[in-house]
Image (cartoon, rainbow, N blue to C red; front, side, top):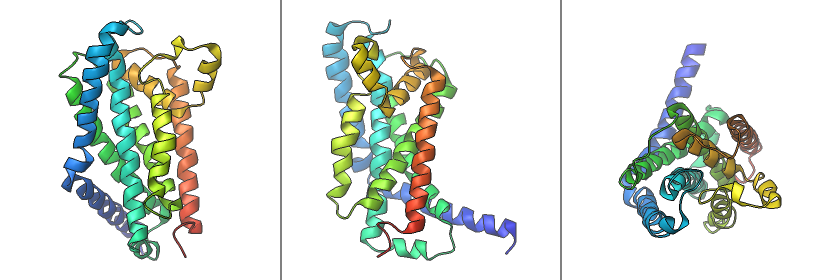
Length: 261
């Protein structure tokens, strides 16, 4: 087989998985997209309008403007993660993942297809939440490049996390453990609703171990132009996490952990 024919085959495999993933969440958008929009709207009303007026400015911005970047990323994180973990585990549960594994498609194409599906859902939800935010604030984008790049990297990172969770999961209950006991605490303690400058030195240092903190601050810089974390450090940490989780995901696929029995 020629090199061109091989890459065409790879493209067909990737696009097939991606289209399947997009159709999967778009057909049930009331369950996959709408809940995040409704939840975020409640955050805007309660924290932005009711509580925010009592809190006052944060880092020189209205509290509502300050929390918008974090709320957008919350929707992206949750949906990118849940799309991959539910889809890949369903393929294990229904046993059709075996058809992919015995096909000539390389493991990295399979991984890329599922991750791209999670990224697509994360971006759709992120744009929907941003559209809702425009009804509550007149916020302007400070750097479109930083905003879009961090949005893409965040969705990629948590899609990989969902993939790893799905590989290790042995039941549908297992796919809810990480979002409940890991993802939610990391998100709420990642500077979504506050600046880490308000914390004591000890808690500031502890917060630096939270990867969500780097994403939220870089995304906040893209929208507002302020960040508690140097931009190079934020992108460096997120990139490092993506490389580690991506390499580990490929290792799990090659060894058949949680997939081959």
